[in-house]
Length: 225
Image (cartoon, rainbow, N blue to C red):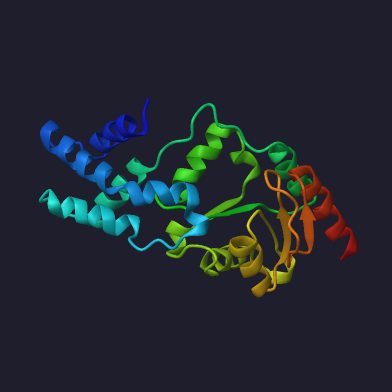
């Protein structure tokens, strides 16, 4: 199923009171307007989002003469979030890393940049991947209202953790968006580069080539405390 076809079905389901023609017109407008969001879906860690998803959806509803109440906007944003494919697989070592985090007595919070997906959408994804049982919390830029490297997503995670930043470890693959803001908040950091060459430099406490190395680094951090 293509992204557009899948979205049409989800938009129609999110707007059950609309006649078919009106739902199709709304879907046409949303899909035509959604290119910036789809670009952000893949490169959001590298760009600044000028028009947020909620504004884009509200504008589309207005053009169709439909009310843009908050509940409708949220339903449509979730309808626009492309579900994970059954062909999508976690990075090698993901299951083992999550299990090791819990075995070490730590908790896992996902902190992600995104355009359409909120935490509830991510929970659906991780359930399909069979990883939800090893994840304790999810925070996204949609929920925080800011994209990384803005500190808002990290601050949400720190408040949830209920501890000082130096007791938190951020594992990320982007120096600018993951490592730098975490270091600025006083968090410990691991830069992982499973698909990239080793960085020439980093402010991270540890540089790891894969997720298995991240698990070893976490054990070493705890042993040194």
